[in-house]
Image 1: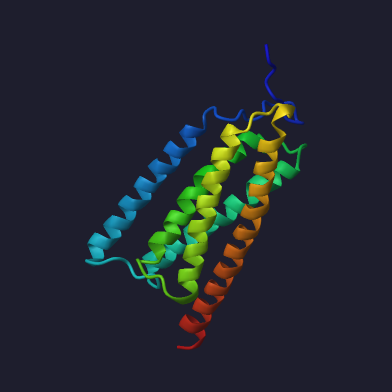
Image 2 (image 1 turned 30 degrees about the vertical axis):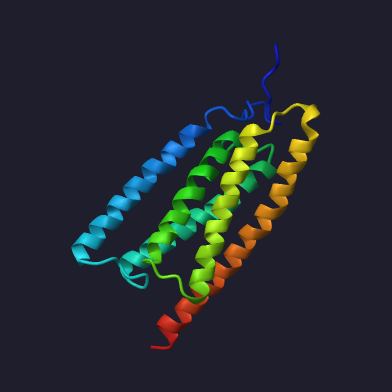
Length: 188
């Protein structure tokens, strides 16, 4: 009988292919709730909330915060094998949920307008999410036995692509936020 993988802190490690559909259901439930809030705001206003309005900014800020949490918290937890703030498996689940909900909220923030730097930032967001879904697929398909080195190399290669794309996204988002603040606040 094969033994279950264990993390450095003695807790069970995530097992590829088990239980990851649940995170997609959590993300879908959150997306439905966010959509209902957005639809209520649109119904009250009689149109889609403007990206620069209170609702638009609220969705953009909340989505950006979720995306920052997605990019940082799971990685920080992986680096700290002595951490007592949740298992790596739990943080991976959190990473998957926020990695879908945050970008969806940012998409709603755009109000369907994809011009200039904001459009490039949204395109990068879509590419990073697609890359993340590819990584999730690879993760659930990569067995943890040493005989699967070609698959592990594919996952490592994916990681080398996904991280720079993520940081390019955050660089573009930072420039977008700074420019929006400058033109919306200082130029008035």
